[in-house]
Image 1 (cartoon, rainbow, N blue to C red):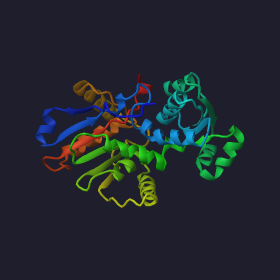
Image 2: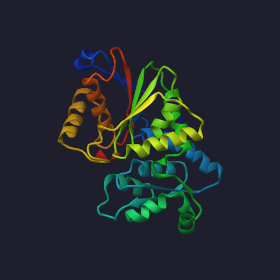
Image 3: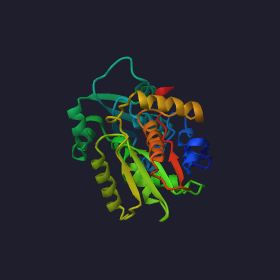
Amino acid sequence: MKETASEIKIQELNEPFLKAHDVTLSVLREDLFHPLTGGNKWRKLKFNLQEAKDQGYGQLLTFGGAYSNHLVATAVSGKESGFKTIGIVRGEETFPLNRSLQIAADHDMQLHYVSRELYRNYRDISTHHQLQQQFGDCYILPEGGSNLLALKGCAEIIKDINLDFDVICVAVGTGATLAGIISALDDNQRALGICVLKNGAQVKTDINNWHADLKITNLNWELIEDYHFGGYAKSNAELKKFIEDFGTVHKIQIEPVYTGKLFFGIYDLIKHNFFSGGTRILAVHTGGLQYMQ
């Protein structure tokens, strides 16, 4: 598992559209750190894996859907760090495995499929003792790897950046990456989250709760809920065409679950003059490309 972002790459996008709206847009290429776990997932796992090791655990257990980037990252990083891994997968087992689950299985993750109802129960921290009884002693990571240690890892995104910016934008699922970024911002910077699922209210609640635990009072952030395209992993022809055109113009691969919606949202906001003239925008490419390869 990569321990440093010293080779971080920031790519500025150049096109007439951006110049016409008097903004600059650069991309933090977190996706390039690792062929399978590149992006925010290794950030969220970094301190969790250290904690698991410090506590003497030999295996990790976590949760995710059939296309979960987090399951892949846990399987790959866990194996690289010497852990056994267990993945609780929402839904029925289907063959052949999709690319995400196949990668997890190829890295020796034990996959256990459960109904949506049971999955919801397992995610509740009060049921974790049942998981310990069923699977043995294990370090339990929440869905998406999102906890206070994940925030600590994601805060390092800001610390590793050697670029002046006004607004940093990131796709938002559980909200942990955005919450970690917010915690490390300077007073003259702000964060913008593009929500990729419908339940933005719950995401806001979770972010505020994490910040309360850490005694963080930053208010320089906003969650935009207009670009989920119907919900998590939902898309349409407009989004797919945008992703294809973006890749052709900038030679950066994005996908329809997270980063496609992020950049679609940024471009639409620029189009509607959401950003004032001269704004320096930095977008975080959070990876999630392994199932498209």
